[in-house]
Length: 90
View (cartoon, helix red, strand yellow):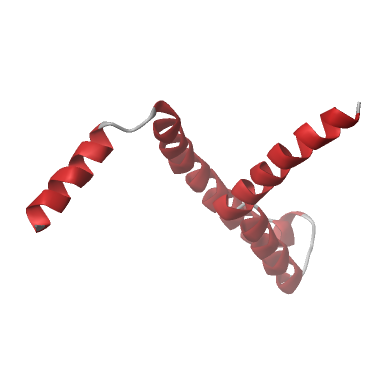
């Protein structure tokens, strides 16, 4: 039974749709960029602009939450629902 599940998973991975493959490639690069940007946003502003550390960490955490893949998907879903309704109004 377990071998059958493993075989089915391997078959599903080899037959991935092009859109699924694009999302996986995009996600790898996107996550790296967001983590690096979060680290930079949490360390550089106190030295460059004189922000206090509390404000800097708070803003970096907000950035990480807003830039998370879940937030990105929620935005895409809302946009895809808004555009057809808005274009129908003329």
